[in-house]
Image (spheres, rainbow, N blue to C red):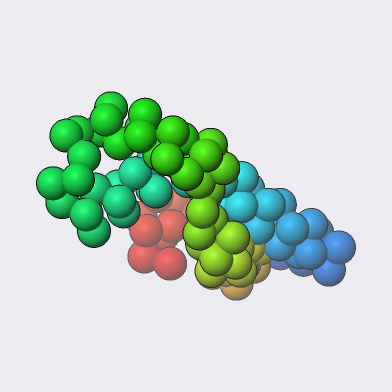
Length: 115
């Protein structure tokens, strides 16, 4: 007979806040890296006909507004996205603990799916 597994220990509060910070910082980095493409997309959507295409837009922005213009509006985007992803990442382990208190390895695939 297989021994009955004991409930897992709950993670520390420190671990929760560490996950909160990591989730938020990773969201900020990903939004900042993607900001130039997002800016080009917005300009092409809001000013149809001004640019001949993607390459024209990518080359015109630094000439007309400077290189930093690619990140215009990124601060608001990061402020909006940071808490969302931080909470998603931090609560991921909490929800896993609530729904699978014995640890995922102690449930069959069907039980894991139904939980």
